[in-house]
Image (cartoon, rainbow, N blue to C red; front, top):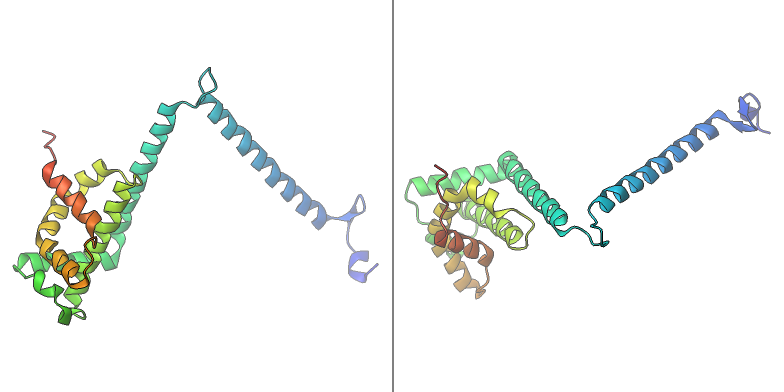
Length: 192
């Protein structure tokens, strides 16, 4: 026996450290078992008398998850300094009557304003794809940013079309276009 072990206090032939480690492992396993048991009970409550999962319950949970993801996205975007800077720059172009299409020119690839426009468009493209695939809630997003999205779409449409022409990619930013055109056809209704 080593000298360090000779002075150690033993319980049932093992050190206190061994028993603490064992207790932690057993508690972790017990917590896992309780979690599985609890989730099983919740699942059984979602199963009807024929043993079929309650579709309404599943759809409700999916809707809540989409809504939460959309709200989280909106909050994250408000805290994103890069996106905020891009929105301010694009807003300035809007306010001064700037020409978005000219920034699509091949010799403008290093222009910071072009980079800001692309940041905004890429952001809309990502969100439109999330909505199309059902990961995000379109109603919440539409109510939050309807006017801004359509203002940006109308201003940047020619910019996007020019990029498509230059790059010979007809699908470039198509998700953003599909979303904006749908919103133009189905305007946001006033709640009043």
